[in-house]
Length: 475
Image 1 (cartoon, rainbow, N blue to C red):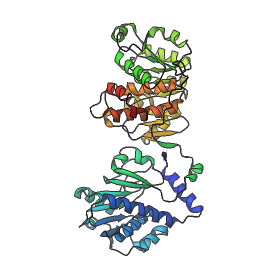
Image 2: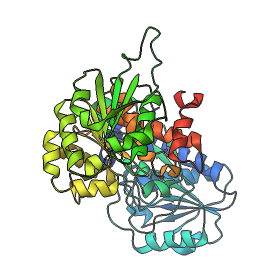
Image 3: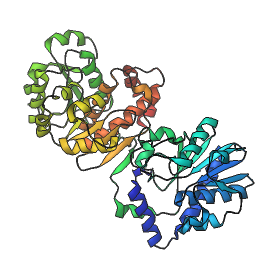
Image 4: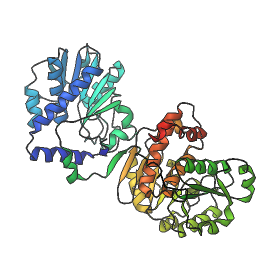
């Protein structure tokens, strides 16, 4: 699977490298228009199609799609923003080949049409839609016409997923070579509908020169346990919990399910009675013995924070964990207890640690950070020196060196109490098995989504652990 995400500038460079290597730009445009026509024919109702074309190459793709749809026998009307004789380059060539109806872009161009191809603006739009484009797309929405978008829905920013004006709610979007961040980030992703990535003749080798740092996140293949392995080779995860014993319990069970050979759950004395008689395979320990627990080098990874308490005791225990040099997941209370002095936390972190804030915890630690969700996660990772997993419907995982992944397939049912504790345990269990922090965070997020899909509607956090027993979870 080709997971790389290209910024608008990187995609322009991919085009330029391909053209410089000998492929004419109009050849790429013809291939793009063919892909759009194919998806439109399979998606839109068999009725007149309004192809809305802008003044650039996105509009050129629309002219090609219009010509090819008409060749298939579809009634097609092209509505152009601007004048045909002002088009340039490949877009002008594509427009010259269109001999069917051509009208100015206006809401009336939709009359008698049962579907729309949106080829007004591509991913590089950086200002809100206005004028005829805004008026026409507003009318598209009012008439509830199905829309297929070229590259991105007009009004969606390709790098951020921001919606700039009346962008259409599309049934499908056809993009080319690779997706862009705006296809994966909200709210742009919602506008796109079903996304097709079409091959148009750009060779994958251009990525060797572009070297994109962002990718769509998918679960990797998990290696099967070694035939001659044993529990100590699979790592020993230490979960530091607190008075809310259930949170630490969920994290510990997730660590065990994902493959850690042993898991110790350390909680305060008054929380131990609630855990005795629960899962016998989880080792219970007193949290006030944390330093002694970490003195055993076989406890090689830590999760701290689920239900731990946002107080001075958690701050002190986190210092002990970080001083021990273990890979660690800092979740929930392990983050909020530093809201008054985040710089002190950042000074103690390294790329071996994973921070897992939701938006509220992120704001408490990092304040107002400008830019898209991807920009904010990257800035936080660079500032903290640790891997940052910014939780949400479009979870972003970012490393201090700029690498980033965006989750796109986690179901909204995961928004339930305890779900984040399971995620922390998944990442911790992978750390215990020797995964590096960025890979563990990315895999944990993807597997968390997979468990959610297996569990289905109405899931609660405990159901995620049951889902991890299904053969499809490790497929």
